[in-house]
Length: 335
Image 1 (tube, one colour):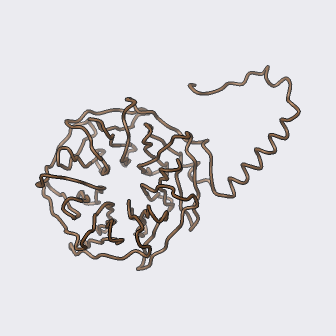
Image 2 (cartoon, helix red, strand yellow):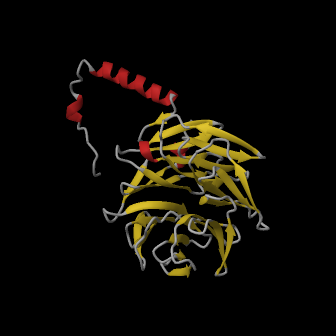
Image 3 (cartoon, one colour):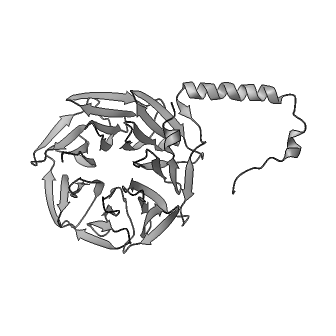
């Protein structure tokens, strides 16, 4: 296997006298890391991009297990299935491809800024685009609701927009200076968004009424957002270096142990855990029962950005340095 060092039986014939001391020292370090909630690299599985210049960005997993991801500075969409990465060409290059969500039919929807459109790629690779009416487009995250509607953050028009049956319906954000970024939809059709610049969460009811809710920390740098199975809302606070939770009308915030971690994405697992990326320090983080545990990625230059969790609790992530990675559920569930 590439990169693996093989030790031959000959090397075990003479053990240096300092080996037991080194072994004891390593054991002490391992215990300290365990107590601090940091896991090292073993257990990760990573796949390099087929083209060295490709930068994988947003990622999501279909119910059947196909892993779709966008690729910055590329004219392709990526998918991992049948044990390998496929690179599917599209009509235009990607620019800030931050929005992507898998649908129930095995395809994926994504924001297509250069085409000023929202597009869908089918499992077979066929692409259909729905053009936006604005001459300039800047888009944030995207989510697919249980009814098949596609919701996305439109920074240009300061709105959260629904695309359903080929028709766009815009929901304007009333707060001046707000920039919608993260988007999530719960099982009942309520849409949640983060409003950057005003430190608020936006809530759009199934009837279309928008409510803005102040978060506790000012200048928090709101980013990605997700709703778990209990309908609790989780969100990233980049500048504050916190993960926030809103449920039953109350906020709770969890500070990340590593300073300036660079939080970029968040995802809720079927087992109730919440995961997030720490781009600046090359780690994945897990929140479970109020406790944060950090998992260090295998390479020193790791830059995890996108995050998704499949039905069996495997944790998938994109690495801006050119990798698609996965932490298997058996490792992800470690104490």
